[in-house]
Image (tube, rainbow, N blue to C red; front, side):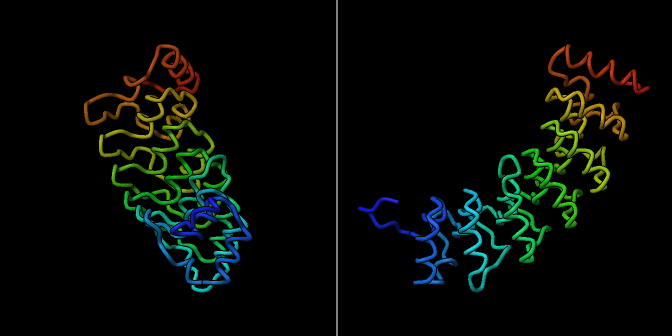
Length: 239
């Protein structure tokens, strides 16, 4: 924080920079500062979560009239932001927000729930926690994608397994382009994810909006041979 220039939103800046003592002082002087949105349409809790400033998150969560489901300009709640942090670093924040009654069913302006974000970042423990708290794996975003599509695109076998078994995600659902999770897994070169999907009932003969089979989207021959050989070992027929 620049000492020569007074920031327009000092609590927001303290939240970003992890200045816990300053944040506490600002909150004591003006508790309502926690409820002010900045020029980015975010509250201090959004910034504290985005930068993983847990001590400041704790301060804000304990403040009067705290709303765990408050949305920023993109419709992101603190829970969604925490779910999207890399390496599941937001899990402790998620636990705190859930204890405060955070609603796992809320969707962003793009139709995504917290599971979409956690799946995109391969945050295995986050997905497990969200599923345990009944966050739906059956919600499609505005692109028609389920969290399963996201997990397949990043090739996370553990998350795919959880979404199918615990989340009861439909395995053959298509997005707005007619792509299934299998299409996404194969097009990104994730052979192990593709095989798991096939073993879980993915229809290899399903075509996308352009009439393409999933196997036709394979990025190179090496991945194609891996998938074909693994499928043969599992007794799975590919078109």
